[in-house]
Image (cartoon, rainbow, N blue to C red; front, side, top):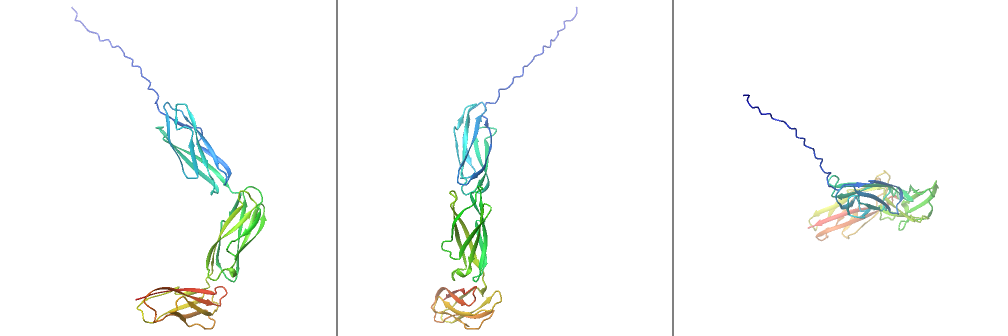
Length: 328
């Protein structure tokens, strides 16, 4: 009898692979992320809109829209979008105070797990109808006996001639200007007359006011900064004592003409009766050595005074010397 043999039947088992369901997530999608306004005037706001759609399979919640600066205002139509639903993000740009090419951005934050933050951008070339170039004039080392000049161009930004009605310098009789046309631009020749600058002023900052025929830019202000050339200097620049009271104090000061031209010291006026100057009345010289004297009868205390020298130099008729004393 033959032994019984068992046959193992291998039955292949086919496991069908199951395709997973697509992720049930929101997807934020913008039709465009950049807008170019082109050329815009500085006095007119520009508005752009970015279309946004939820292309996912769950609700899209937009939680924040933030602009990169305070010059841009943003708003959104809907903050929550069902799958397939769309809305718009609106940006309003105020170009006031800007000039030339400007680039700005917005950041949109949502519950999209792949792109939680999206950046939207826009750019514009801000055109001024009239642009001063430069916007500030500098006059350095001005002589009191001379007139110094500088040019200023008013550039046309709209292709029309710049028409000037009036040029004023309130409170600055030493400033004046005349204009001429070069194409559509107006060119101003600004003059600073050193002879008309008050004797007590060595530096200054003034405004030149230009009245134009433009409706958008009727008034243009150009700042003018200036300083006088110091032709006579004092060494030391300041005199100071820290001493006991009841004794006479002296300090030597040398006044020197920087250009090597002889001059005279005509007078000296102190702000305190106990303060006076010795060595005045000398003939013309390139430099003068004088003595600053504080009387012995000066009472104890702290003194912040000055001496004003009157000179015969036309470019510097006065020189101020600070004097400080602490008497114990």
